[in-house]
Amino acid sequence: MKPMRFGLIGYKFMGKAHSNALARLPMFFETDVPVERAVLCGRDAVWVKQASETLGFKEIETDWKKLVTRDDVDAIDITAPSNVHRDIAIAAAQAGKHVFCEKPLALTTADARLMQEAAEKAGVANQIGFNYRFAPALALAKKLIDDGKIGKIFHCRGSFLQDWIIDPDFPKVWRLDKTVCGSGALGDLCAHVIDAARYLVGDIAEVVGSLTTFVKERPVVERMAGLSGKASADAPRAKVDVDDASSFIARFENGAMGLFEATRFAQGHKNDMRIEVNGEKGSLKFEFERMNELWYFSAEDEPGEQGWRMIQVSEGVHPYWDKWWPAGHVIGFPETFVHELYEFVQCASQGRPCAPNFADGVAVAQIMDAVELSSQRCAWVDVGEI
Ligand SMILES: NC(=O)c1ccc[n+]([C@@H]2O[C@H](COP(=O)([O-])OP(=O)(O)OC[C@H]3O[C@@H](n4cnc5c(N)ncnc54)[C@H](O)[C@@H]3O)[C@@H](O)[C@H]2O)c1
Image 1: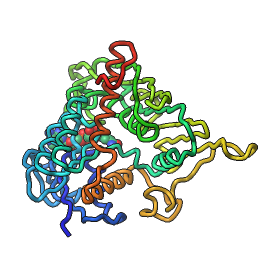
Image 2 (image 1 turned 120 degrees about the vertical axis):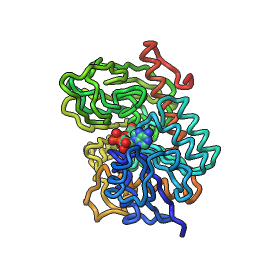
Image 3 (image 1 turned 180 degrees about the vertical axis):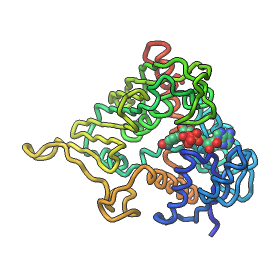
Image 4 (image 1 turned 90 degrees about the horizontal axis):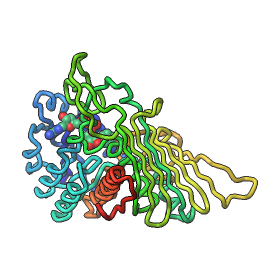
């Protein structure tokens, strides 16, 4: 059977997460086609060669333009920073390759739309890396909502809190450079929460938000890095042009209210993504650092027996679980990437649309751009305006 041969661009944080997922996918999930780690791409030949050996790729490329036209590659997986997503995804789609792209889809909604158009025109599978929705507990929340267990939805409350750049001497890494990442906490963190909210509750019609940059200048980093980096003691300082924190209120198209916050300045919070949904008949809440658990309150339980119950989502009756371990042998962050790549491979081989796909990436980009515009205008913005 013809395998799906992956060309992966980037080999650091997400590059490792995706390589690990591609290696484990065939060990646990039965896919329609075998998956191959074919070519790893990075700009520095020595480093990419070293990484290809560690991450199990057969060959290397140092120019993504050559990678996307190679005959021995069927799918392009983009784990480089957001400033290169657009050009790579469009070129890959035009070369007839299936495309998986990390979030946020692009620097702007306009660029994200170009990517969606290119992928749809080429008829290739396209998926975006909103891996949090592949946590089985969040997938279960979606099932309970779809089954009508919490009824009409009134509220959706989401947050994503981290604390890694509170030190004003922490250098200006690429996640703080608008030309590379597009936005700060909003695009890096809130994008996941917005996707989870759309997945669970539906589309957002309008937003009003506020963005803040607490530390306005930071030392120039010695070597470009995403989450860590060094600067010399006498390094000059450069302007930080992205948000350190962002928050917004939303009105969903179905009438529900939304409240969202993302920050890199919440001391003590490491990767604290949470979402709660309150409906007429019940509520659900999820926090990623306890990702095997889903909290559920049902107003339909017997009076006197009502209360929050914690469902440990770790047995075969739950989404994705039949492929893993015996009940209670919990899974973690890396497995969400196995699940999303399983979805991608199956959809590509069966010709089904992936979920979440580039259209979802565009929808999230629209909401984020609307939040930025609203912060500038100090007013509500209709998402359809973007
Ligand atoms: N889904 C998630 O949970 C999650 C988590 C972190 C990051 N991300 C997203 O993944 C992407 C990468 O983030 P990261 O944290 O892995 O970054 P990183 O800095 O750890 O790694 C980026 C990689 O891209 C490579 N690269 C950069 N420019 C390139 C180019 N022009 N050609 C080829 N390779 C290039 C770098 O050499 C490096 O290997 C971003 O879009 C980010 O938003 C998603």
